[in-house]
Image 1 (spheres, rainbow, N blue to C red):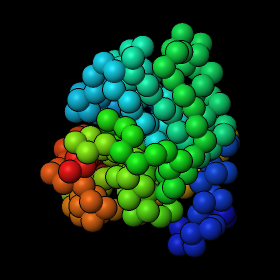
Image 2: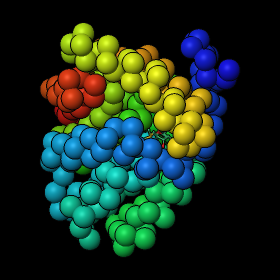
Image 3: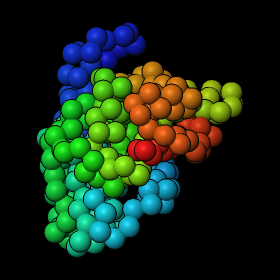
Image 4: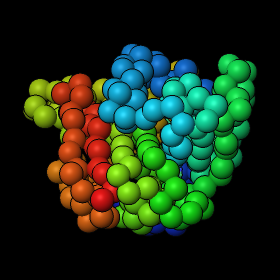
Length: 243
Ligand code: SAM
């Protein structure tokens, strides 16, 4: 299969990621709620809390997809602030734009199709950056982290919300079973697409663990980097500051 359990080279990976998100865009929100049992809302709320974003801030949500974080930030920063929802995938961006516009979230929102590896924004531009369940899909993660560091203002916060490594063997076993047998079946049932969800499970397993990602953020230039495990380490929120 296209998404079988083998390693793929980087150009191949970019194409696979694009295919997955074009095909799931319209059902993405529904699948997110089903697959996480709604818990992704709690993970995202915690991310907002740790962001320190206030009225008037300029925020960039990278790999923002269907705009869950951007919608919350838009309300917080108000008319004097700005929120940029950036995503590499035009289908995801379009679903996000429609959803937020329908909810009346307009005025301080911008939508930009962009690759996290080479962000099209000036240096020292944003008060806060977020990337939620996005870094895992990026081919060159170090380039993405460097690019993120560049566009952040000194003193600004960078938050990375991502699947990580369960902190106990029990959670780890249950989670493996869930992601490699329940998830693809759910994907098949709800979206008629088990391959995309198999890719999802594989990409989660391959993603760097908590300490590795922290090291990568340090390497990209962030200081005071730390992380918070959530749901037994299934998800971690990393935070770094630009000096
Ligand atoms: N942040 C949203 C959320 O938490 O619900 C969406 C997460 S979704 C799992 C991953 C998103 O990453 C997709 O919308 C995909 O198009 C985007 N993406 C993948 N590779 C990217 C890249 N190199 N640069 C920017 N976005 C990327």
